[in-house]
Length: 190
Image 1 (spheres, rainbow, N blue to C red):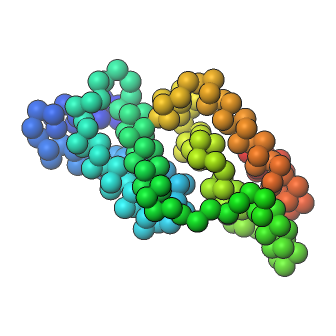
Image 2: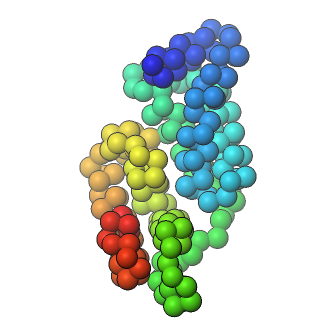
């Protein structure tokens, strides 16, 4: 029903009923904030980025041709907005080479609980090159399927598969031993 509601609301907005955009915002606000949070790990910034994405989507509604799912188009717009936002903000990134050392020190100081493992993975994902980070964020954290994530990133499915494979290898290289030692297993690194 959401796809049909999205199509109806988009059509109503294009026809001049700007209040219909509220339905889109209500349906997609939390998913866009969650996606933004995966990019920046800051709730306030994620909300700001999601608001910016909605504004961009509103201004660009006529560009959605209705050929695919509205949500895929919306996430592509949001992903581009988030990338641009982060380029402007220049968030500090932890080099992958130092992440293993930092994580090892933390392991010695305390037991690695689930939240700590999750934080380490998020930090490692943020430390990936942007093309790998974005692929991992959409496919795993936002649980998009391969074709939706590829479309959102403007990539072919083959290229996305390659980015995911390389990203998993980098994460495994830098986090695999740490997470296995903590009982997280290999799957936690992917």
